[in-house]
Amino acid sequence: MDYKNHFDNALIAGRDIIDISPDTIITVLRDLAEAAVAQTDHLLHENQKDLDRMDTTDPKYDRLKLTAARIQDIAKDMVNVAGLPNPLGHVLSEQTMPNGLQIKKISVPLGIVGVIYEARPNVTFDVFALCFKSGNVCVLKGGSDAQHSNRAIVNVIHSVLSKYRINVNVATLLPPERQATEALLNATGYIDVLIPRGSQQLIDRVRQQSKVPVIETGAGIVHTYFDETADLKKGSQIICNAKTRRVSVCNALDCLIIHESRLGDLIKIAKPLAEKEVELYADDDAYAALRGHYPNELLHKAHSEHFGTEFLSLKMSVKTVNGLSEALDHIARYSSKHSEAILTGDAASAATFLNKVDAAAVYVNASTAFTDGAQFGLGAEIGISTQKLHARGPMGLQELTSYKWLIEGDGQVRNP
Image (cartoon, rainbow, N blue to C red):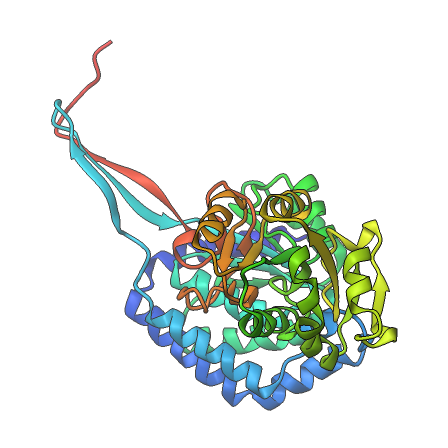
């Protein structure tokens, strides 16, 4: 199949979107939020077609699943995005040079944003809302697992755009087949930046094969360190929330690191996890502390492969350390630089952890479940970047902009 027509249409839409007023963008996004809720039954019907083709034990099942409550939350996020300040046209710097040239640096859209993602239909709404608000065209390549859901969502988006006589190709959905991914990876001259959302395998493939610039949204291999001064009640609640709130998301806890002096508290820490039927892969010391006090069928001895693993399920590893230095070493070795946390009552330890942990989001005495664009006040997110160039952490409107220089003169020429 020739995908050039899709890309040509996106380029044309990129020129058209410049003429849409900020007020119209706000109105469209609010109208779309209402349309999404109004179309809940239809969206759930199409989503069920995708769910019926997936094993319910697949970690992607929960990400794929839409519910009326989730659609309501998506709609709220779109309204929040609509109400955020316009990120475009901001004067980032300006100066008048000795020769009289007036130079400004202003914020502008990235352009044509390609997004490759797996079984996450909410991403279709989120990406469109953020790209549209920031003056970008989005070219979407969803996985075949969510093809019915994505098509239904894009149809709702297109119906609202048509109502306002806006070029519907500002939201372009590519076919679900793998050949479309290959075309997107090679769409130089069309796509300005490519953002992968999904498994580490998908992200690695995009990073290694793409000829288009990539912003990497990496997997979340997340740790929480329970140190010798941590509050037991608060800590157990935080750990359970970070692990079990939604196990299939990238900010979910994968490894509990515990100070050896607190092994006596591990039974109490683990009690809420047992109630949620979390399987634990514990090192020797942690296993000995839990044996006989944690359900036998849920307790296993950890092996090397259980550390540095993003479980995306009700599974978690437990590592015992002799202090903050060893905890930092373990995190440095296995972290994907997504989200890391320390539970502590010691200000010096908290400061050291914040300073030394290299991750996009670093927490003290809070659940890593908060690593989310909406929770960070961004309205929604297009992804959580684990790299350091251009963007890091939850990516919202500001991260979907670049800048350009505007130079005004009055006949100046440059001498040799």
